[in-house]
Image (cartoon, rainbow, N blue to C red; front, top):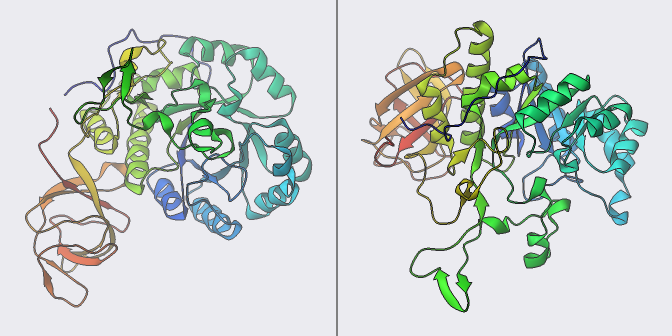
Length: 422
């Protein structure tokens, strides 16, 4: 199987951490939160209805936050809230009440960039930790020391930070370090982009980014069109970050929290990626010296991938080959098709909530936490009234089918849509 990332000399350095790193997952709504935690996240980060950078996500009311905190607590997990806008004067009104509401909901930490938000949180919601957002573009140990002196227990480093820089930070500052290890990369420096502002009057740093770099453009040079004819269009988005092949290095250098990007991503994406990293982290700590990256983990990552991937800035500075300048094929020939809601052990009949069209005869896969996995063909399917169906066409429809192996509620079902990737 083709490696996910380009061949690069591996980082080797002194280890600074002794315990297991936190696996931190995104959750754009309450359902995604539950799946992230169920599939192995130690913590999730969400957005409230104010002060975050994903205004297009569903985001959480205070009541939903409380429910999410209670659900996470049953698994021993925590919930963080992104409050990482750069606030204008009109944004400050209501901030104190909002932060008090987060504390009352049981939120463990906020992720903030604006000093006004940070100071206010420390003053009015002292039970809530403040983690410095990657929006602060923190790259060096002196800046990390500054934020530690300001009372922050954790810094989320800029995505442009290398392994060597992380090692120096960990050697010189006793603080928790959080780093993005999987997901989309911004084409601009740590999200400091104004294309969205220019094209659509939607402020990237106040939660309104319209993903301008992912748009398809016609490209001209000296009035001659060089890109955009026929179906080809020019884009300038980055490849996605994927560090699964460098998990031991991330652990050894001392990253305290492994952060997955993607509050706008699907349940299938979040659960699949969390499931893989959970298995890999646990396998490493079970036997560090004998750790081996399993091929099936890479295959699973591909099945959730939206774009080609690379290692970001961890090993070297990305070049032209690390951007996407033309249309790309879907990395994996699978689509999310359903969620198991019930299973009858006596009959072997599963109830699946439809999330995408499927029909008898299609190849499907069932996936659960911890690496549970099997393939089969879609058998005869019925609706709740027991009527035989020729296809599952309706969103959220309850479908009954026989499975070749036992399944559990919250297991996912995906369907194959084409030839497998070599």
